[in-house]
Amino acid sequence: MITDPDLASVRADPRIIELLSIKDTSKMSRVEGWRYDLSLLAREVHRKGFNPHLDFNRAITVDSFDREVQALDASIPSMTNGQVVLGMAKLMASLGDGHSGVWDVGENPLWRKALPLRFFWFEEGLFVTAADSVHRDLLGAHVLAFDGKPTQEVLKALEPYESKDRGNQIWGRTGAPYRVRRLTLLHAAGLIKSPDEVTLTIIRTSGKKADVVVASVDKETDIWNTLPAPASWVTFASTLKSPPLYLQHMDVPQWFQYLPDQKTMYFQWNLVRNAKNKTIAQFSDSLFQFINANPVDKLIIDMRWNNGGNTFLGQPLLLNLIKCEKINQNGRLFVIIGRRTFSAAQNMATYFDRYTNATFVGEPTGSSPNFVGEEDPITLPYSKVMANVSHLYWQSSWPQDQRMWVAPDIYVPPTFADFQAGRDAALLAVLGLP
Image (cartoon, rainbow, N blue to C red; front, top):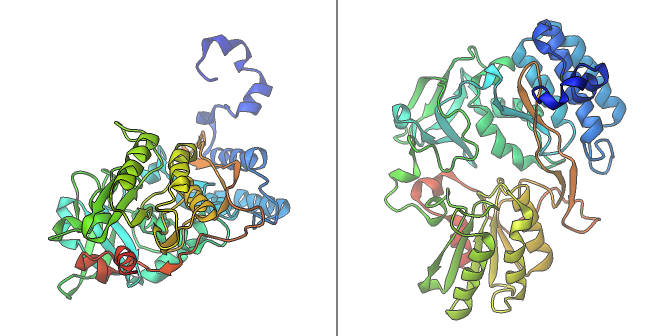
């Protein structure tokens, strides 16, 4: 709309400017710009969000949402830019929808830097699982505090800003370890002293306690879908003599390996997307051709790293699984799920739960069986903050299903003790069954 010459004749029409929110923000003051962005974000929630205020799915009413918008609008003059972003994130999180929220990517200056570390929240606490080469000595470190503030307090303080499906608390264990990389956010929330560096109190794998200062850098700031880590980084798994299967090919959309001694097929499904050289449908056909032609007693589908993609691409796999009588039986089909099992992966887990005889192992999923989803983000014109308002209600389970997640039949939470030992407790739990 802004650049197309064929639309030049209508571009100056005030109705078009209002309808498409293409007002020139370069002439606005800081307060005017942020208020314009906030009004646009609120308008999109009302316009586009799927029944955003129905009590059965949302935690907030129309009136309470609008009051929160008005309160944030009134506070903008006294807030820093980071605090305004946190206010927007809290507003979106109040919708009780894991797909609608403020994203920490894009052109806004707050996202220019991040800690060169990857964290994971194990049962024992927060640990460093990957780092750039400069900080490889921090691999495996247990992070006790950020600028003296206990890590659990920091993670707890981030909860109000983390969008998640209503009641699904485990999704925060996925998002918070990424959020703490953004020191600008921690600083805006009053959790650390500087937006540029932080003193981490750690316990190294040697058992020695130390305080280390780590600064944000302008490289590899967005690592959400870069698994296991950026190519130039070092992972803790790479230091293990024999990494377990679930850590070996996290960057491959789908792959399988036959375990002949156990007569078990291990299939890791990391993304509901077609691979470059093979579609999911083609992959599924080859998987079940092998199963039907060989002595396979168990099939394990590992979805703990799978955070979604395109649900429709997974249908051929589901259909092949349903009709495979050799595997679709109690005690023969197992699905490993976890906190990152989300969006399209959640749909597939829900279908497995509904239509097959799968036994679920691991942690609860990061989404609800019925949820509001889809991503078509907008960039707010003044601040360049990227936000998403989801609009499609996926009713993949029964209409009456109010579960906050698909829960495992065999609960196996991830521990650092297992991670450090190169032990996959979830896989071992399945292989140990008769």
